[in-house]
Amino acid sequence: MVRVAVISGSASPNRTGAPVVAWIADKLRAAGAEVDVVDLQDLALPFYDEPNLPRLRRYVHQHTKDWSARVDAADAFVFVAPEYNGSFPAILKNALDYLHHEWHYKPAGLVTYGGGLTAGFRGAQALRQILAALYMVPIQEAVAIPFIKEHVDGSGFRPDARMDQAADGMIRELLRVQGVLKTLNMPEPKTDY
Image (tube, rainbow, N blue to C red; front, side, top):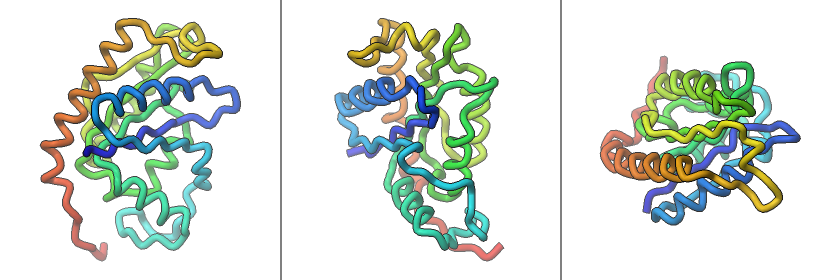
């Protein structure tokens, strides 16, 4: 079974992404994936505090060792994030920066949202660059949710048909690409550079 970590990339006290995370996690389970929902607000990683480069995997803090194990256990990722000032939230960048090898050769799907028509497109573009630098493979199929407040209420997230269709396409491609990348995702030898 493919293990997919769904990472909630917002820590705003008024965030609207939790119902979106629940929706995409349910869709992944329906597709046969094992899902680990990671709420970065609950994870509470401090601003990067490791004395060594992530590439060396010489972690000294328990929170980093725990985060490393959780990311290492995932076969693929779905990042759910709002757009902030034309990019993605700092809490997500910090979580990505903590690790290096653990992200390698794993596919990543994006679910972005925004308060307006842009639907998180600019944040997704900025995030894709970082994911590629970490040797992840961002899936081209993505879910973009404009006017998020119109789709969230007390009963949860109410996607329209296009959002459902986009999510199904992204999940199919994520699981397909994961199967191909699995052969590349082997433990790497330790290096001293």
